[in-house]
Length: 110
Image (cartoon, rainbow, N blue to C red):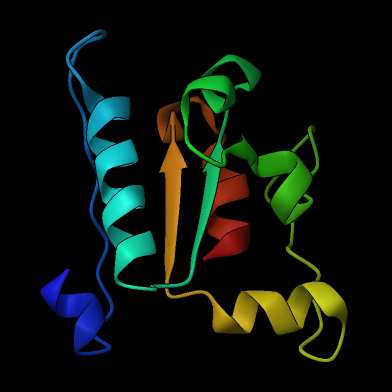
């Protein structure tokens, strides 16, 4: 949280066995970011986990990631369109079940 307050870029990956509380931890972070008014997007790679993630939607629907990702997959978003304006304001992306996402999809966003 301190890094976000100082506008520093942070990449954090949480990995653990099932039923160890990862989604609970992410939901706690979501609540804290809402309290601190940090602009976030909450997405998940699986439809089931979106039901457990506060405000969660699938990454495919929010970020318009193609279901059949390949090396040439790219994230097409223009700064002037509605999605581009929203994404420019985002300070934090919380992505549950990231390990289920194809690596080309993640690289297209990054």
